[in-house]
Image (cartoon, rainbow, N blue to C red):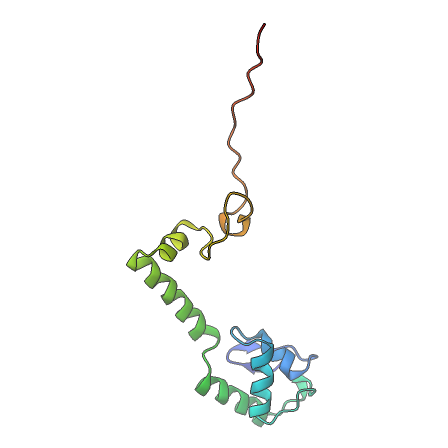
Length: 127
């Protein structure tokens, strides 16, 4: 398995698909990286030479923010929002949706599993 930026990329997939296993690289960026490094899109990852891997790693290191650097940057941005006390920061702090989604229903991904509260049973009317 070739190792790029500290991540093992899958052997049996084309290079442009394997590059997507790096955090911060999507389909369009993966194709762009392959073109800049003169690597065939259909070449399997196991067929990459050491020189091609070095070219890809060097390009990622120089021009793109990926993996650990990107994760750190995202966490710093969220911490900054929390510290300044803006609305988005408060939503992050409370673990609620940040981008305006409804919370009356849905929002289970952010809120977690339902916490059922024992409700008041309907009192039967006596006649």
